[in-house]
Amino acid sequence: HVGEDKVSTNCDCESSPAITYYLVDHALFRAREDIYPAPQTARRTLELYSLWAQAVARIIDLEAPDAFHCPDFHAAMAVMYIERPLPVLLVLHNAEYQGSIATQHMGRTEARHFADVFNLPVKRIMRETFIEGKFCMLKPIVDYVQRYQGGYGVCAVSRNYALEASLKHTVLWGLPEVRGIENCMPG
Image (cartoon, rainbow, N blue to C red):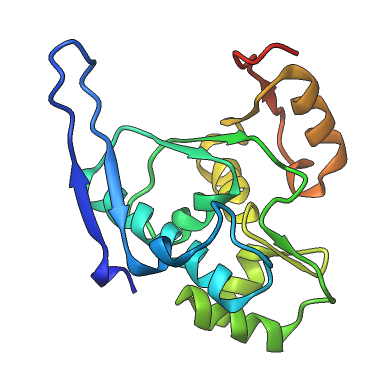
């Protein structure tokens, strides 16, 4: 349901590098009360993530960037909608959540619900987003990195967090590495 979105670009500062910023506007984005709406299991919340992933994919398809920098799980499902492969870089800020829903063991009934929300076939939802009986929005991009980049392209906001995430979260276990990048926040 991306047809309703509006995309704006603006970068007219002479001293800035050649970077284009995209602002995506939709009533669903403006209606939320918090940056991360809760509960994560609510259909309205999932619709927001669905719309966001589809909007990101649409921009990728229209603009054909050199790479897709995915900051955490929020847009990780965009790779399920893009029309052409491109290099991706996933930066984990909160792998603890992973965009996961594990209120019960997920099966075909739940897959139909997610398929409806995310506008994707049931079989694809089950194959590309279910892991250990739960729905995981991070899984599609991790699988994508494995398929197209040999498992390289995932990092976390610190070396310690990269190590912790790669040991703790099964969605990351098949990767050859999760690199740590030092962020600018004092630790």
